[in-house]
Image (cartoon, rainbow, N blue to C red; front, side, top):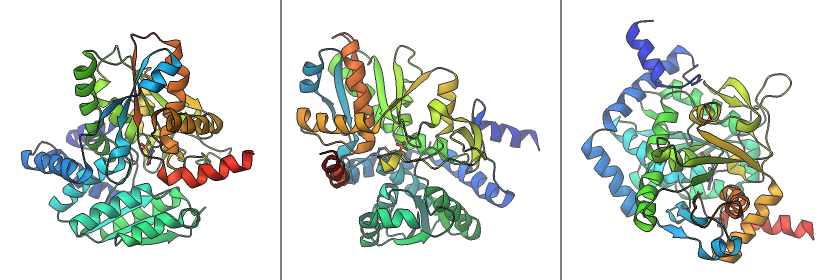
Length: 392
Ligand SMILES: *Cc1c(COP(=O)(O)O)cnc(C)c1O
């Protein structure tokens, strides 16, 4: 390996995590992607176009809402909510999708592919592909297409082709494998639009770049409203993209605590071990045979046995804290935010709320918490209805 290649590879590492562990054919495609991303992320026209679509299509900047009722009720730290739920398509995922599709266009791609678990990334991708008139194929595990039939229809309504992957367990992991195979076969005209800060380099770096808009805005907003930085920023962690976006502009502010919240049922960061999955190294939940462990969170978007390499590094270097909340705590937080603030959060986001409900009363009135409300809960209302009915 030449020295230049070595430096290139180091770029994709966060401490011991990250990197790129893929076959040579795929590595060539990823090298090209990294090069193009590095070029366009500094390009003024590219940045202007990205900001244009965030404003006119996504509806940014979104508010940093003071949750006064919840704050008064808990009697501790002031709670602010970063309102990613108000974005078009109802979550943070669209920020990243817009960025990557603009890059795909510049790279001359005439076809977009993506993986999806619960379907939220697939819907965001299909939405952007409709806007830009680019044909799109979404890979989804067969089991997931059955559990999320309505999201399959949404994607098809938006003009996407959904491929049900009937291999392995028919879940997210299998969909990623199929999408990567497609990319290796069709890389000349195809762009793989990755949904979170996972996968081989440059995906974790690129997706963070496009999600960092969350903390770029929230930092400006909290300084305007309070004249000081928050005590802590709290976000839920699945693959880790909304959390890394919410943390990004605070990572160098040592006074700000960064807190990632995982489901107790899929605690990659709190209980995982270093291992390579999907072509990168991260803290991962493995079964007794050393294979990625199937997980079952009530929030489909948090159901992934691995996690972004930068979170793995922030965890082992003690820069960020990672905690878990249970399904029952999440369900209670889902109802609490709905009733006290008139905001129905996504079940994923309700994990972050659940931790804020515990933390706020232990802090003083001078403290400030920013909770990243990664998405709205309309998609989860039926599921919560069924869970609550079963409890009765
Ligand atoms: C997909 C999703 C998540 C989890 O993904 P991250 O990459 O960890 O952000 C969280 N919240 C919502 C609303 C989602 O749609």
